[in-house]
Image (cartoon, rainbow, N blue to C red; front, side, top):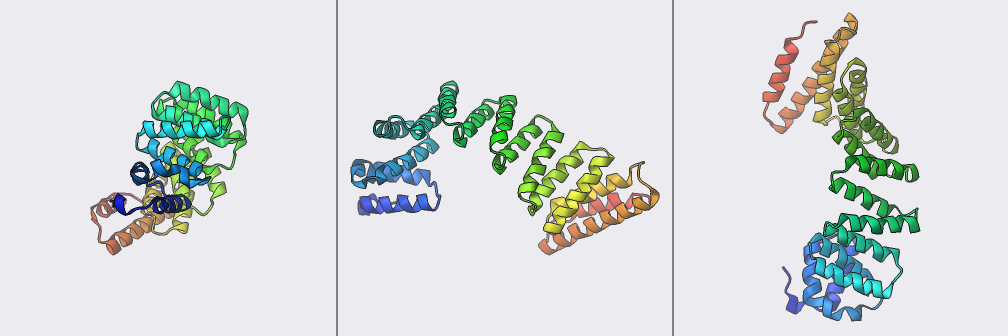
Length: 287
């Protein structure tokens, strides 16, 4: 809590500046300080006033204070009547009010006036997702990625949408693209392995095993990858397509993964019931 009587407007200005530079939202604090101290003294901010107003708009939308956001947008619109940036805030305000169709119309205008601007395209995608229109969101995302192919967040979002729609092969393709951008992420290798394992069938389990191994190589303490490697190896060892000598290799790999999980559980003093159940399942296998 802040003692508003002890705070000068310059103190609040410096605090807002610090939060902006540190990429800290602190929306509740921003709105409280704005209403109590800075709103009536905003003229003293000079040119920094308009940067602060943008900060207030974002915080107001976070806190569902549409009234404050609307006041700030009107001030900016008066100063910059043809600004695409101000138009984007109007779309965000409409989106916060759940006036999605009106927001989409403004976003269409923004895109038509500047096709290289990624922000309105991503806001369109977000609106489609909010409305549960996953198919439209997928189409918009695929069009977006034809232009902004290096956007890792978009590839991740597209993968999640394909998973929600049950299209595992396309979800896997998106994760493969992410691995190209970030080959040292053990979580991405684990994610791709999970998808391949879920797809099922001998060939996919083989691929899942490879990516689980790579994930473990990058992070030996990734218990989920160790558990996934155990499951993939067990399924492969039970496959009729596997030669007898290969079956022994997969069972040994499953035993190794199980031992690693056990070691991690022992170090962290976790409940060992899961490990015991895995040992029981492994013991029932016939070599």
